[in-house]
Amino acid sequence: MNSQSEERKVRLGLLLSNIRLEEKLLIQEAQRRPDVELTLVDSREIVLDLQNERSLDVLLDRDISQSRAMHALQLFQNSGVKTINSYEAVRVGGDKLLTSKALHDAGIHTPRVRVAFTPESALSAIEEMGYPVVLKPVDGSWGRLMAKIENRIAAEAILEHKSHLSSYFHSVFYLQEWIQKPGRDIRAFVIEGETICAAYRVSDHWLTNAARGGRAMECAVTPELHQLCVRAARAVSGECLAIDLMETSNGFTVHEVNCAMEFKESLKAVKADIPARIIDYCIKAARAAQHQKEYQHV
Image (cartoon, rainbow, N blue to C red; front, side):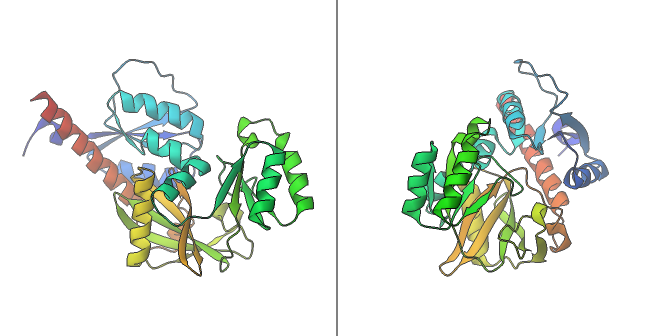
C-alpha cells in the first residue's frame, strides 16, 4: 500500500519540561527512526490557544508537572491529536485517591484507603485503621512527603504540620494501610495491553523508590503478574504505564499506577528495551490515527 499517510513521517511530539535520562533515551530512539519527525514540546515555553489545528499525529506525555500536562493533553486531545497517555488516564493515574478508587471498582486487590479533609477526621481515620499507616500526598512522586505513622503522638504532629502546608492537596489526607512487604516491591511496565517487563525495587528502607536509593533486580513476568498489571492499566484507561505492586501473604496488591513513568533504574535489570517499545507504540498509534482520519474523510 502506498497511501500518503504511510509515506509521510509520523509527527511525534514529546511533552516535557526537565530532560532526564528517560527523555534523553526516548529522544535518541525517536531520532534513530527514519519514519519519525520529532518535536520537543516544552511545557515551560509553549503557548496554546483554543484553535483546532495541531501539527502533530501523536503526543507522548513525559512532563514531570502533572498540572501542565493535563491541560496540554486536554487541548491537544480535543484538537484531534492522539495523546499517550490520554488526559483521562493522567487525571486518574496522577491522583492516588482516584487511582485507588478505580482499582477498587475494577475488583483489583489494592491496599485499604481512607481519605479525610481535616486533621481531626484524619486522626479518627488513623485510629480506626490501626497503626502503622502510611500518609501520602495524593499527587506526589519519588516517595516525597510520605510518612509511616506508628503511634498517636507521631500522627498528631505530622497531621498538624501537613495542615499548615500551602498547597490545597495537603488538605486532602490520603491514608493507606501499612503492608508488610519483603524488603522490596515490583515495578511492571505495561504497553498496549502487554506487560513487557518487571523489576524488583529492593531497599533496606520501607520506601523502595529508585529516587530513595532502591536497587533494581529482574522480576519474572508470570501469567498472574501479567494479567493483574493489564487489568490495572485498563482500570485507569492507560496505554503506556508503570504499575507498582507489593507482595503479600494473599498475593499481589497494586498500590500505584504511573503514567509518565521513570524507568532508568529498571533498565539495569530488565532485558526489554523500554524506550524502543514506547516509541514503537507511538508510531503504531499514530498510524492507526492517520488511517482512522482517512476513513472518516472517505
